[in-house]
Length: 150
Image (cartoon, rainbow, N blue to C red; front, side):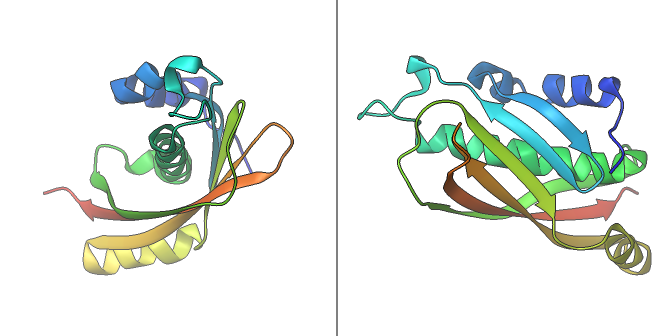
């Protein structure tokens, strides 16, 4: 998979001020995938001192958006992308830095064919959230909806 430009990564970082508030950081954006880090920060902890569920959800959603942009960067400005719905399953207590790895589960060509035929397309992006040891602490799916502008 080919990595996208640093300008796109910078644009993603700048586009959502809330993600910067949480300290989320993109470490990879490429066709079909993106990786976002959620820092280990006491200000983001829950009542038992571990990663807050909302921070993990935000990291997963940000990673899914990165996978979208990494796959369809040439469409930016000609489509409206929206996260339509999401599901998350928390599997284990999450401590330390969390890595959210998002992956498109459909081919780019299938999604583009629906967009061309219907002027819109829906597709899921799956996200694995893991701790520093690589243990999956949550699994998430974000369902994206895109439609052509105009």
